[in-house]
Amino acid sequence: MSDLAPIRTRRKPWCDHRLTELDPDSRRVFCRSCGEEVDAWEALRAIAFHWERYEAQVAALQKEAERLGEVVRKLKREERNAKARLRRAGKRPT
Image (cartoon, rainbow, N blue to C red; front, side, top):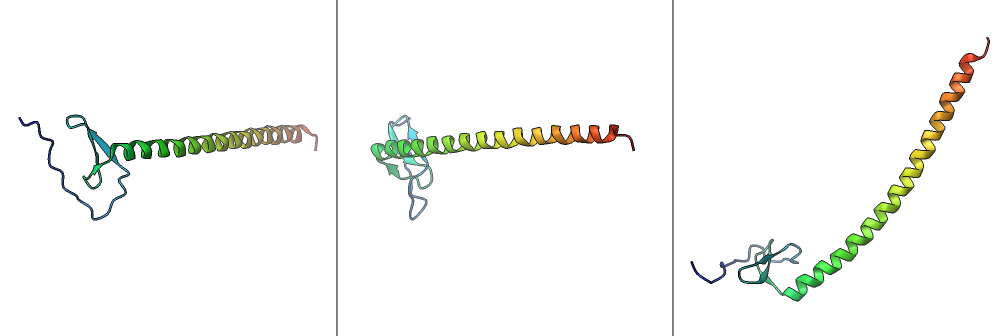
C-alpha cells in the first residue's frame, strides 16, 4: 500500500466548495462536489460562517415556535368556550 493520497480529478467546471471532506490520511481538505483540494483555513472559515447563519435560523425558528404555540393556546381556549356555549345552548328550555 502506498503513502500517496488518492488522485482526485475536478468533476465540475466551477464550484464554490460548499461540501467539504477531510482526508485523515493526507490531512487535507477536499471539496465533495468537484474533488478539488480546498485551503484548510477557507474550509474552517466557511464552517464558522455557516454556523453563525445556522444559529440565526435556530433563533428565528424558536421565535416562530413560540408564536405558533400562543396561536394554538388561543385556538384551544376558543374551542373550550365554543363547546361551553353549545352545552349551555342545549340545556335551555325551548
